[in-house]
Image (cartoon, rainbow, N blue to C red; front, side):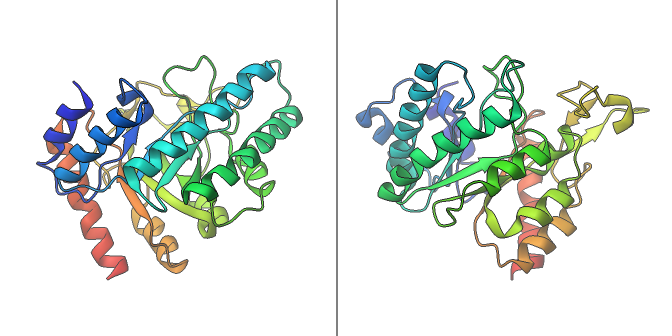
Length: 277
């Protein structure tokens, strides 16, 4: 479907905003992007975050330069669609076998610090996600594991225009504890993906662990209704409340249709009312 068809379909959901992904767009020209923005706002939504997947770990310096330039363009697009303080997602890049941890950390820090002035100019917040793997990538996220993710985060001092886009299910996929991660980054969370995962019958997380401790996107680790899976959303909301979190929480659901997405949204409305009102 087109992005315009999706916006129209989403009008049936009890949502306040409609997040975008860079792959939805058939053009990056301002006129087209403004048309998308008009459709979002006409449907009664805000645009809280644009999900982008920059690759800052490519061994080719020209490719890293292109990634910076593209992310700068995406910051501009985020401003057109979402206005002040919308979030533009950043990733670190792919975990290339030939790139050491030290070298990757250096390149990621260098690239993100070049983008912070662009974000500041547009009044847009960069959200670093604890991601698994963009669909167009060959290798998983360089900072998929919590220890590397925290190293990247701690290397960048900026607090107003750079923070964490937290996804508890991605922590599970990484073989990490999502609550432990959130406790370490809660004061820097600027947005959140509320997805949930559940295990196929007879399967344990230990069964799925790979040699590096991650799980990957195993078919035995299924996407389901938020609040009915492996994540402890009561604990997650308690932690967010305790740091006075006031950002967006986005649904990542719909693999099994709109009814489940609606159920996930209704669950999050209940949790918001329970912990924030």
